[in-house]
Amino acid sequence: MEKTVEIKELQQVVVRFSGDSGDGMQLAGNIFSTVSATRGNSISTFPDFPADIRAPQGSLTGVSGFQVHIGAEKVYTPGDECDVLVAMNAAALKTQYKFAKKDAVIIIDTDAFKEKDLQKAAFKTADYLGEMGIDADRVIACAMTTMVKDALSDSGMDNKAMLKCRNMFALGLVCWLFDRDISLVFNFLREKFAKKPAIAEANIKVVQAGFDYGHNTHSTAYNVYRIETKNAEKGRYMDITGNKATAYGFIAAAEKAGLKLYLGSYPITPATDVLHELSKHKSLGVITVQCEDEIASCASAVGASFAGALAVTSTSGPGICLKSEAMNLAVIMELPLVVLDVQRGGPATGLPTKSEQTDLLQVLFGRNGESPMPVLAAASPVDCFNMAYVASKIALEHMTPVVLLTDAFIANGSASFKLPDLKDYPAIRPPYVPEELKGKWTPYMRAENGTRYWAVPGREGFCHILGGLEKDSDTGAISTDPENHNTMTKLRAAKIANIEVPDLKVEGDKDDAELLIVGFGGTYGHLHAAMDDLRAAGHKVALAHFRYINPLPKNTAEVLKAYKKVVVAEGNSGQLAGWLRMNVDNFAPYKFNEVKGQPFKVNELTAAFTSILQA
Image 1 (cartoon, rainbow, N blue to C red):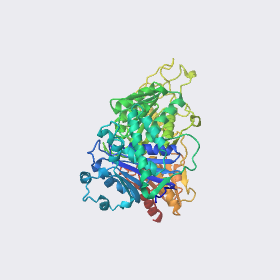
Image 2 (image 1 turned 30 degrees about the vertical axis):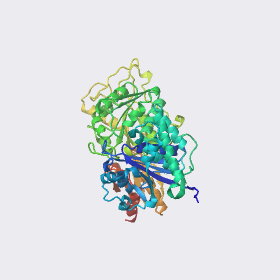
Image 3 (image 1 turned 45 degrees about the vertical axis):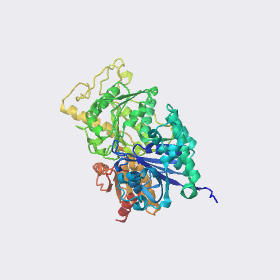
Image 4 (image 1 turned 45 degrees about the horizontal axis):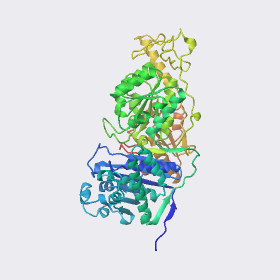
C-alpha cells in the first residue's frame, strides 16, 4: 500500500549545496534562499568559494559550497552544520560531509560517483558511503545526470549544455523536500535568462523533474518539511547580499543628500560586486568608473568629491594598501569620501575568496602622518545598507574620508531584507559655505563643530585651491610653520573625535551578566547565537557589538568596566582588543581569536566562553 506524504513543520533548517565550481551551486543556493525569503522566512547564507580560479573537474580543491539557514523566526548565522547536504560529485561528498550533522540527509548524483570520480576524490574503495561511515538509509541516491539528459532529450541542447542544468534538478528535489513554491523558482529563472528564453525553459523543465522525482519516490522516509514564517513585520521582502545592500545604501544616501553618486573602483575579490551593482543604476544619477589601478580609483574619487559628488571607492585589504596615499590626500584636503573595505584573507594575495577581520589596524593607522579617519563596521548583510548610509552621512557632514568595513562572509552572504522607507532615515546636510561669507571665506574656515566648510566649484566668489601640502589654518596658503602644523593636526583630530555616534548597546543579561562578549563587524550573528545558547544553558551572558570603531561610543569604557569578565572575539589575532586597550585604561579582556578564513562556529564559541565562565 502506498504511504501518504506527511508534512512536518520545522522551526529551522540548514541546507548546503556543494559540487564543482562549474556546477552552479551558488546559483542553486541563491535561488533557494530567494524563494525562502520571498515566503517570509528568515535566512542567512554562506557562499563558500574555492580559492582556485578553475580547479580540475572532480578535484578536492575545486569544490564550491553554498549554505543557507532558513528559520521560522530570526536566524543569526548560516549554521555550524547542515541538515541536508547536496553533493553533486564524489569530491563534494568527501570534502563537505564534515559540515553535515550526524543524521543529515545526503543527496548525491550517482552518475558522478564512477570509478574515475572516486579516484580523483581519493576514495580507497568503491564503497564510498561505508568508507565515510554514512548510513545509506540517509542518502537520496539518484542518477541526476541521466534524468537531466532524459528530460532535455528533445531540447536540441548539446551534452555540455544539458549538464549545466544538473544543479536545477537538485534544486527541484530540495524544493520538494521543503515544500517550496516552485512557481517562484520559475519566475526567477525567466527573469535571469530573459534574453535566453530557451535556456530558462530548459532549466525550468529540469527543476520540475527534480521536484517530481521527490514527489514520485517519496524520498526521505515519506516526509516533507515546512517552515512557517512567524513574527515577520509587514512589508516587502527580498533576499539581498551584503554587497548589493551596500550599493543600495550608497544610492539612498546620495538621493537623500541631493548629490550625484560617484564610484571609482578597481576590480578585486570580494568587493567587485559593488561596482557591478552600482553600474546598473545610471538612471539614478550613479557614475561608475573602472580605473586602471587602485591608486587611480581612489584619486578619481577624491576629484569627484572636490567637484561636489558623494564619492566612494571600493576595494579589499590589498587595495587599501595601495589607496593609502590618496586616502591621506582626502584627510589633509578634508573632503568627504567613503572607502569601502570588503575584508578578505591575507596577507598579500592570501585567501582571496575567504573572510577575515584582519584589516582593522590597517584602516586605523595604515597611513603616514597623523591621519585620523572614522572607521565603521557593518554587522550583517542587511546592516550593510544602514552602515553605507551612515558612513556617507558622516563623510558628507564632517568633511572627512570614512572607512566602512565589511567582510567576505557578510558581503557574499545574504539575508531577508525588508525594503526600507527613506522617510525613516535621517537627513544628510553637508556644511556648504554660507553665502554671507562670500568675500571673507578661506578654504579651512570651519563651522562651530570644527568641520571645514564645503565650497563646491562653480559658486561665484568661492574659488579656491586644495592640495596635499599642509595649509595655513587662516589663509589656506601653503605653510611649513611648525605651530600651524601642530594646530592643523589637532583640528583634524578633534573633528573626528567629536563626531557623535550612538552609545554602545548591550544585549542579553545586561544588568547582571557573568560574562560580556565583545565583537565587531560580521561576527555579530555568531556571537549573538553563542550568547543565546549560553543563556539557554542557564548562564548570565551579555553581548556588546561595535559598529562604530573610531570614534568609539562615549559609553565604551563604562560598558567594558561594568562586567567582571569580558571576552573580545574577533577574526584576527587581537586587533580590536588592542584598540580598546589603547582607549580604555586598565582594560584586560580574555580573547578569542581565529584566523582561518572561515566564519566562527557557534559550538566552538560556546565551548570557549563556557571555559571562561568556569575559570
